[in-house]
Length: 325
Ligand code: PMV
Image (cartoon, rainbow, N blue to C red):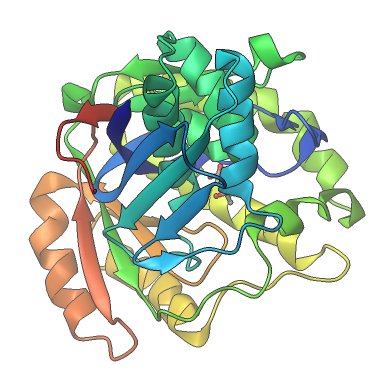
């Protein structure tokens, strides 16, 4: 059977960085995120008894099969479904990959849902989240709707994501500034392996449970200023760990830094906006809906900004009949 899924990327307010189990992708700490309405991956999967090998095409380019993470993920689906057939996978992202927009989260969430359905499995949201997590950690947060918590867990069965609030719970936005389309030189998966080399990681690890509780309290109250302050401090703490890893991981470019400084300036002038950054140079500006226009106008004046993508809180992975082949 052929199945197609659309999945959103997500932006973490409290980040995942470091694993306590490499193989199962169990994170060092839980995390909290929001699904993004306009950063989407669409994936069609078809298992076929006459195909002799798997084929994976991403944005029109056929990927090599050796060491291919998507094929490893198809193996997980085949194991669950007790299936041996090879698959054809076609994927398109509506945004650049490898620049800090988390295409692996939307990618593995879409592949999990389309793959499971095409293999004849009918998995619960929790089971899909567990499957997606094994492809790419943050992908498990792109399965449920809206504002999402990933429970770190101590086993595969206890490490999954669940929705805290639906998309219409809070009218905030993520205005993404694409600073350049150059790909990062160290992937998230590789960068995370260095986490224990930062002398500051034990400090981070020790206060993560309190941080998660704090973020959940703030989400309950919907106080935008305390929310913004915590999310920006969290992004800077994540990058402090990256910068002090050995070898160091520096994902910012001059354009990233310029926008970070401007966000602080705009705040001092009364505009309520906060930034967060993942692995890459692109920067996410979080604001309340009425401030979007003002932020976009300001971003358009910055030479380094190549593109702007406005995102609202979104539903998670879903099936569609619009197959890609
Ligand atoms: O799931 P990965 O391996 O792409 O790692 C995601 C890491 C961050 O984006 C930096 C943080 C997060 O929680 O999304």
